Image (cartoon, rainbow, N blue to C red; front, side):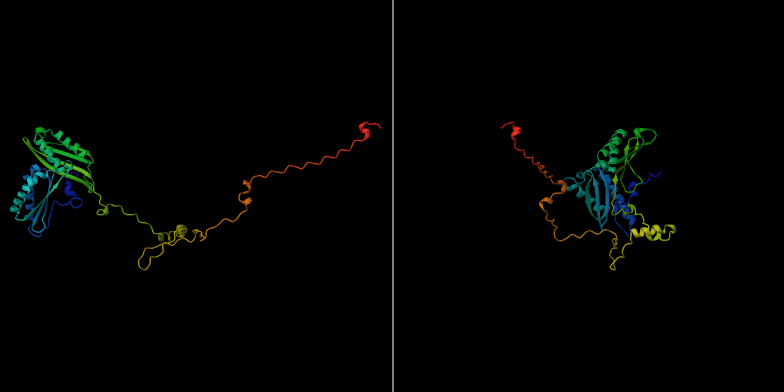
Length: 321
């Protein structure tokens, strides 16, 4: 379920523009039919030029046609001869002043319409459908595509009963509006019937925050501290919260932002003196702490005086008179 909506029309006006941009108060059906015939004629005429899309603008009574193609040289021709002829034919048919703009598709492997047309061209040349699908998927992924899906439906390989087969590689969010999904459809007219080819290419998400403010999550609502006053047993807690977080000061009369007063119990920084602080003068002995001062050598103890020896007597000496 849910895979049957056109990926381009599903995102029209959100991240995809309209292919025809004009406004008409009257004669809307006539202008719409003119646009459809013009696009069909150009696609048939420029079938070999690999046309991706045709956009129509109607500023005033003029007609501006923008053609996106991977082969601009075929449309322009030598010295612009082909494009001038194309302008004259369109002006003669619509009876308006016609301007033609050519835009080149630099990577046709990442354009869903060109991918489906290339598969259709290969099926008309009797190439195996599985090989053509696999080649398109591999080339798209090699060029940086995040996801691709290719589906072919019809009498595949000339079978008697029509069937559908598809390949899917990568991711393909079909329900995500911000996903950039390109869609293309082409038909292969073979000898055993018509085979339809559909291609979906996922190129990433388009996140333009200036235009997609609705995608951003809203901030959670904060509870007002005044609601805590009438809560019965939580009165003390509310009072403590109010003491710890005083209310913000009212805004000024001129509508300035509200400012919160600083709490009074915060420590205030010390006032620095204007003159530099000089260390007091110290004596050389006090320059080092007491535990760093070298120990002084103790003086040697004083020797006691020896007693004087008595003079020898004649008796001691043994001399006889």
